[in-house]
Length: 112
Image 1 (cartoon, rainbow, N blue to C red):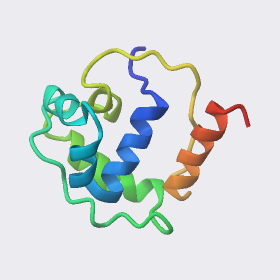
Image 2: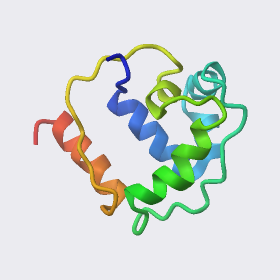
Image 3: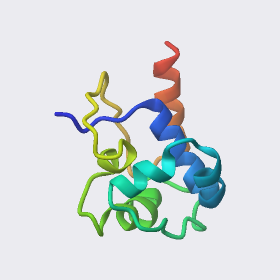
């Protein structure tokens, strides 16, 4: 029940996909949260193309490599292992562009 994550954490994950090294340098607390979650190093996110990458691509080439060593969920990694209770359910399809799912989360958060 405590496996949610914040919109901020989702946007930080998108930043990691776009440029992992820069995200680690510029997002306060991100490195510490990853270390606390057991992530020793970021996987290679060079596969990610915001205009083409589907949710399936992000799961298989990004999320699974990021979480498999610790056998945890992305939510646990994104929150540094701290419980976070979701306020909504974000549904998605494997074939949709990943950034469309992110856009839906942002739209929900701003009441659109």
